[in-house]
Length: 496
Image 1: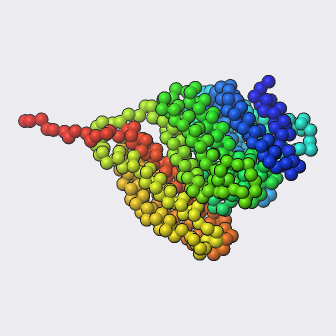
Image 2: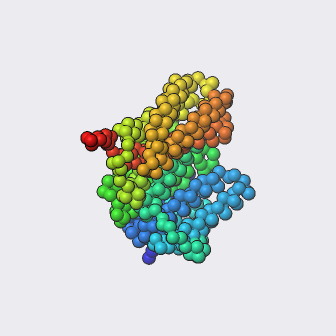
């Protein structure tokens, strides 16, 4: 029996354990849902690690990459954008599977197999199958198995067809190392989760689901998709994507230990998993305020302080994941410091301290976002002091970025430093513009109703801020790797 068959047979059983809480005692049902979730997590980790060993690491990287994109498109589709946009998103989802197979076929020399990539994506998608199967409660277990089998078949066939096309267009270039590619996918899933969190905060829907780790008493993975509307959708979709990030973190550990990666990369992969688990707990405690299975909002004590910590810590996890991706690359292994380069000690120090400046700016921005009362800038208790501090710090961070990134831009011996320098200068310029627009939209709002334009620009501002922190962490890591710790000794002319 394959891993897919095992999951497929288990899903109807798990769904049966998650009956509608309206028909049973709420407290008893909550305990049952919690036990099921705990079993899924405790048993799921070793199963994921064991299943990962069945696939080549390059296929895992491409398969999880396709899944991350599919979930992002699915998120947009569940926002009910209309018939035409919905159909376009569905077509894009099919194209993603085809494209993943195309890449695998074109780079078959790297060990990639299109049909296996599709299978990996299908298995990863089983994380959310239970939520869709809740609509099939009146059907037989055979119907659920057919649904799962159809998901696997479509994924495998589309990737296989993409592979046929890709094999007709072979490439002489090479993909990144499997560890670096998977690490990049891993970091991308974290970034997407940060963006979803930005949308969630923008719509002030962080408390739309009152309980945790259950969702309205349901097992988190089995909460019916049909009930995910408005604020509940934003909150619960954020939780589900967090489960994908957690699963990716587990598989990444397997990839790093199977690939020739440095010891610090393997260690940091484990640390990242722990950080993600802590991040999930922070998010849950932000909702309930304490470990509890109560659903009654009057018995809960949501924590704004933990909401701030949760938002800041997420971006630190993302920055760490980017550093791991860099450390997993072939370039990291081959690159060496050029002792003849006229680098100042200031270059290295400014780059290494830059992430600290971004973190401080991030904290001030999080304070402003999470301490805002409903009703816009005119509401009583609006934290004007926080936005003033955030704008003042923006001047400091911009100046420091121009110093550190500008110096990195000038290093002709190391193109990676020059590229990061350019990206940081352009990025911080765009961030200033987005910040001005976001603040203007918040201050212009006079009611509790939040316009989509405000959510769009505040989320863009937050997302670009996460990218800038990640880029600054990369600049610090590469500067540590490539720049000499001391300035080169001056050349003394020989006596005549």
